[in-house]
Length: 541
Image 1 (cartoon, rainbow, N blue to C red):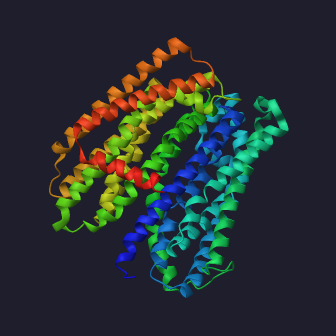
Image 2: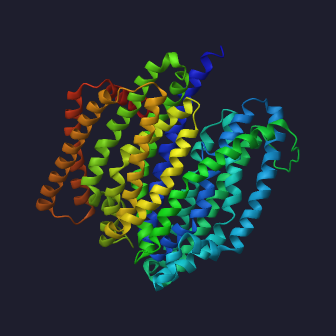
Image 3: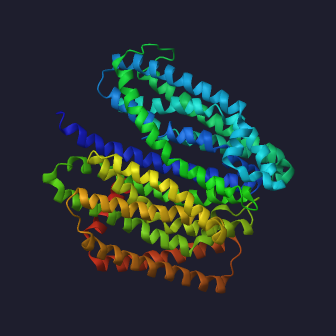
């Protein structure tokens, strides 16, 4: 087998593994959220968990996530070295990073009240807010060790990926979902119907925190087992700080850590403003429930769209290949539009039955569905620009320009805070989501403008026509779904899970059928490419 043939075949295999693992993780994530909604609804326990999990979650996403700075740094360093050199490098980096994160863990435990007050200063204003604050402090102290485990998980991701081991790193995040489902299930079995009573909120919050920590530990143990089995690392200290590989890791890790960390500030900004709303626990929980409904299809479809395009963009970075690069950018944007625009329209039209079918049981009541549905509609508006921005950012990275997206991200942080401040008073909770959507729109326009200059002009007007056609087709699909839903509600009522399912499926089918008929009239080659991509990822797999 030649070396030249290996990467292309490996790339297809890697993309398939990541897509399947992402689908499994997203499904388990949705099951986890359904269990939490049934147990806690929009109550204080889960609201407190959202505030307390910001910092541990920040470390888990930033340090422990795939494509995070630790993952990227380890892959970059280990890919250049053989297996014999890998173990000492991994052990030394783990010792160095682990020492720093151990201190961070102790600080989080000692100063948990101060961190919660920094994250959500508005919790002091109401009795409900004070209850949420007290539970959040307990939860943060329990989950503080996640910071240490997150660093180890990120290093493990990079180590295994560098050795061409992708399945376990990609699928292991579902362990956190599984442990939370088990924890919530055990609590529900122990308390029975009393689980929804407010006096048990603190107990529920503690169970959530311990379950999250247990899931993170299991994820780390799975990676330790895989690393040792592959001979990549022994579980012991390492102090070879002069190792050139260690220095290579630190050179990549530092800038990547700073850049990725800045992007997480927007999450904190939204949480900060929710703490000043009349019912902060319900508000922050509603954001999370609605966000998951958007992120589940986004995560699955982004892997189908983005993963295959990344190496293509990189291969076309030479100026002589820019004409083909522009064509590929068009493909990425139009495929994003084909996937996201009709999905957004249907989510806006059918937000209420979607939320009711997925979440409305146990502690999650009809009033909770109305609040989450309003937030879901706001999130759905921005799905296309969210993924389009990621497509454009990848183009800049392929061109060796990470500075432009970084500068735009810095400006976006300040704009997000400004828009949050301006929109939360007139629009309430959905205003925070629309603030983020507005920032993503501005960021996407800015990226296009700079890319237009960098590539000596883009055929933006030519791209505008198919995008306009897809937008019109999506709007028609959304209106048709909404009209069908109203008709079915008048005929069947809107109570009972079977009736809601029938209404949701029939209304969605009408909308998708109309969009498909409209889109085929546009005769876009990207539609065929999108259909082929779906077949490759799911039918053949």
